[in-house]
Image (cartoon, rainbow, N blue to C red):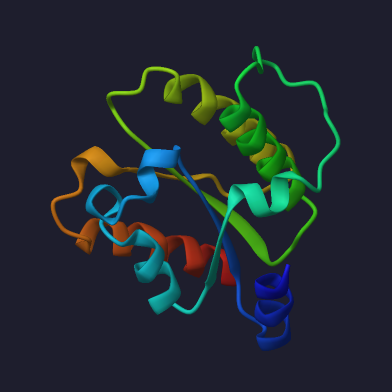
Length: 141
């Protein structure tokens, strides 16, 4: 994608921001995408990279399109040194518990850091900013 090429030209980290379709609503996600870009990273959604992965076996039943995209995105970035994944989750969605465990497993197999943001508990972006800054600090090491 053009954004990936541009980010790589500039030497920027690339964050795959993944979430359920309703997480795209700025009222729900609190502008986390803008916060990430303000920290100097490029943000793309999981559907941009998930199409680059062939089907592969997962440890969980993988029957939903969103889950399949999420797992494929996690697998794809495993071999991309400049990419990391941030997953937005909601308390109200029970299946997020399954997806988070599987995404974490896929990422950790490739020594990637799993970052989850529970958007239901955000009252201000201060805590989110701290989580993201610690992710970027860990990536620089």
